[in-house]
Image (cartoon, rainbow, N blue to C red; front, side, top):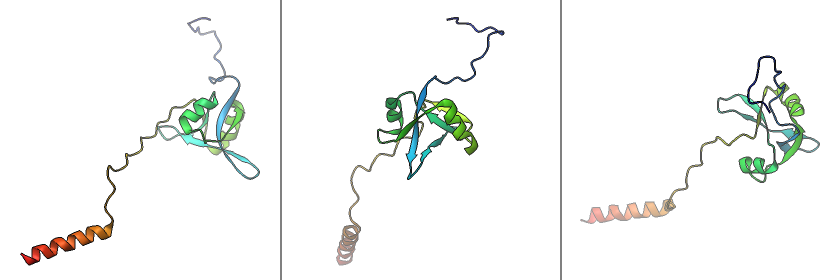
Length: 124
């Protein structure tokens, strides 16, 4: 394998792995809908993974998928405005906010405590 590319060398037509991709999908009654995503800059993109483990690591084990070739996925996604194909993306969503440390007291208890404090202040 040559490490350098020369001007007369042809460019590969597609820079995606050969073979079928694992594509996130939503099952329907008589059809399956391919899920589309957005890049960090907001462009629509189709997404495919090279293994079911990579798909599960990014989208969760419960995410349904189908197997499609890169060219079939492009053909399905381009009419929907997703001209990009992203293979094995990393999750870029912000982390979920942590849960509060202690639960808040019920509203009735807060009201009763405030009423008791008001009675104490009034009797002094």
